Length: 451
Image (cartoon, rainbow, N blue to C red; front, side):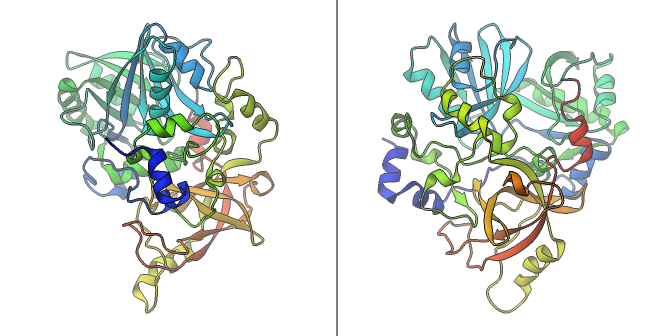
């Protein structure tokens, strides 16, 4: 029998000790790393049109049955009052203390039929409550291509960029009907019926196309065949993994499952292999110090107190006095260059900075300082070719969140953890400037246009 998360924490002595030295790597995208080079591929969703393959790295949880919507409403902080077939939403869940479990995209496929798509944190949470609660629901789980035997159930392609609309009209041979953000439409591509979500991962116009796996290559071939006219660029996993830095989505904040009321049974249910790994300069013996609220990540607009859900009472208290807000931190280019350059000088170097994505654990949590004291945490980090900046997404105390505020990010671990991806290194301080999230003005002004 697989070790449970509860047993693994007991064996390690604490949740922090377990996660700090866990071998789990950052999210793996099991697709071609680069079709050309990640810099040009990043530029494509800003200048022409990018084609990204989302079929392999995410988990699908298909939820069906007469109580499916009730389960989702009981677990999710979102409003479901007007949720209807052919709509989608960013589904968000919290624990009983109002701290974030995670988020995923919820597709309303048909009456009593849903597909919850994303990283496993919130998917595990929903499945647990469905299996242990009084719900008439059925689950079909399609894990990502790292854990699944065989092909995915669905293909999922993302088209995004200023030429995405024109390419879609050429491929389908018809005008694209006006579709609101996170609403779905149906198209015909090469004689096949394809469903689409109006979506854009990097804040650009986009379509997320999906359908039965066996039809995927035919759909992809049609897109590529017509794509030359519009400057279509195939995007690999390196560039793809960095797209969120432009749209300001934090992909894997540490889920608030390792302590707290109402989570004991869940930790006994969840396999230890799902725990993930913790990286970064922020250290505390209290796992609770790593938790965030939905308001810390800019999800307040999705919280709706129009129904009862797990953690509602606690989340209402958080809503009365949000302490932090999401920002972009633009790191000082001289400090970044010096850290990279330390690899070519005698002595212990700084922690290696990978490009375009520099995080080295599933949950990246780095210290952010102002006037020598901690004022927040830095999450996902990497290089944005379209802005020519090295930046991170962060949750910062309100008093330090104004654009232009100067802060410091501490990069590297002290002491060095035993994670396989961590080499001997020294901590360094990176000067950074607070900027809006999303950092791209186009993304800020257009990401949710026509909602």
